[in-house]
Image 1 (cartoon, helix red, strand yellow):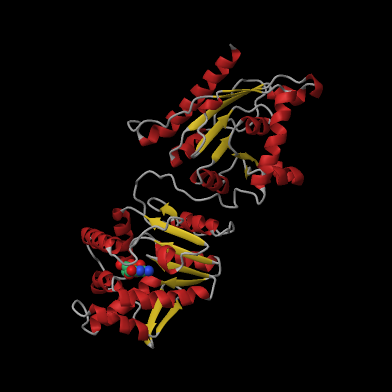
Image 2 (image 1 turned 90 degrees about the vertical axis):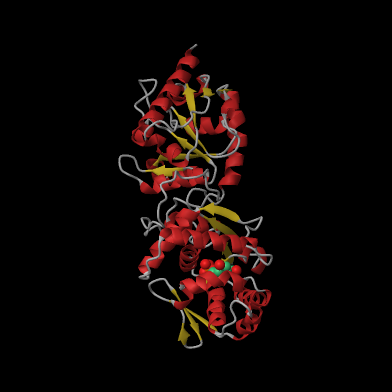
Length: 455
Ligand code: DC
């Protein structure tokens, strides 16, 4: 397994790559540190700026040595001399782009990096891993973040090292380095066509690590340092693109879902003459929240059978007490929520579904309603659509409660109605009221659908 992580300065690459390597028990190679080390030596040898072309020879003979330190910083040695701090100095940072643009330097270091990759199980981090060094890597990630966010992170790192550099100075350094690294003719900073881009602005370190581990097919990344912030920008979360982790997706759910869909959907249409209305309201791609009224335990099956895309339902954890049922619904992509307490794991999985541009199914009343048309809507339900900036499709089910309560053979006529997408509250709604306004819009939309169904 080879993981290639590329991105501009300050996108969080080193932190993420190092931690992913640790969790997946892989080796880690910071290729930027290699270019920095050559730059330090070239500066010391007086090769910068006029004799940079001679740096290639240096690169070929440097005995690099890396050591992982307990405090998570990679120690860099040239022979016995430690250069860990020196290679992060401003002079090195300002000259590294010029040295790394030198063809002879790149040729030597690219070769060394490929030799490391050939040993297997390694996370390589740099600018041209996915495009040049290991284009056949199993996982390719391109991390980005706004310049301001990257400068803030870099400043925090510098302060931790006791260096106090002004923020606007860091911003202009980063902008200059971005322009140089992306504009150079040789191995420019560029996202590989098949790399997954993750915009880390406003994401926590933990969220990014989980996303990369998920891409590597590991759903077991421990969330213990969940609160470690990379630094927040105050910007709203953007839609991110990465596949569903195994946390949500069962190992066989694609297959099982298709089989279940092709059996259940015609059956429901036949026996309960299930009629479906408003399916044209459903966006056929992108993240969507589906919020439905709740009358019967069979509701998810009816919505699932009527809906043209796979829905990942948040369902009461009690379903998992009966193991075969838990197995079935879990493998259909449903995940448990423990009601009556703050279930952070369920929240994380719901966010995971939307981040993967999939469909999240919720029953905002929390419990099945027997007497009323619509029970109280839980205040937290709009949290997901607000947090991930996605629309909600309201759904109303009719007569699903009679399917089990009456005699099975009397087959009541089940109706599934999808309403038009409910937009998020506009920008003029104050932050403190966005949740209340979104919930009110949902209640209104569900009541409208219920009234229409009566006509
Ligand atoms: O990741 P970093 O900021 O430590 O990298 C330092 C410089 O090295 C960066 O400006 C570009 C260069 N670099 C490169 O050209 N190719 C790589 N694979 C890694 C880094």
